[in-house]
Amino acid sequence: MTEYQSMFKGNKTKDRILAASMEIIAKEGIEGLSAKKIADLSGISKSTLFHHFGSIDEVLNIVFEYTITYLIKPVQSDQSTNLEGFLLSLGESIYTLTEEEKIAYLVLLNFYITCLHNEKYRSYLLKAKNEMTEAIASQLTNYSSQNKDRLLQISEIIMMTLDGYAIHFLLQPGRGAFKEIWALHVSGWLTLLK
Image 1 (cartoon, rainbow, N blue to C red):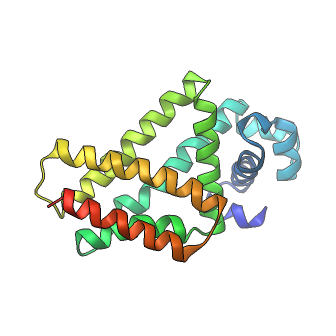
Image 2: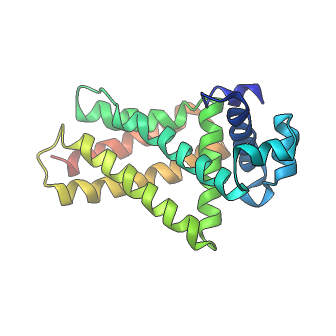
């Protein structure tokens, strides 16, 4: 579990709990998460778990918020010098995933699955989708003179593509093919953004 612990910083026990929770969700889905599994993987007792978090729902909320922040932050802080560079960096963020980033994407994909039948997580996921769409649109304003509504529409297209791209990359990693496919998408988006 130590490779995932670096994703969190702060209280060591809380960090171990969150890292263990992410690992469990990534491997078994949200339904696989239990106090016993978290405690066992964290090397703590269940009472210690509940000392730090009031419930498993609280753990899930924090894991979800962290995952979204972790995935949005690179988009918000991108320092590309031109539109093509920014768009290419979005794709590269998928086909060059570190092990920690793969865990974050697997956690997000498990929230996607759960939101299909759990309204609570659907609202979380829609909020996150809107945040990411806004982050992409905000970056696009640095490079394109299109109006905000158009940039939001194009950002939505990019988001849908990123989602599918991540799923396929996690199924069949292979940087070369994905890089070429992403470049094709970028050429289309460049045309839309002129």
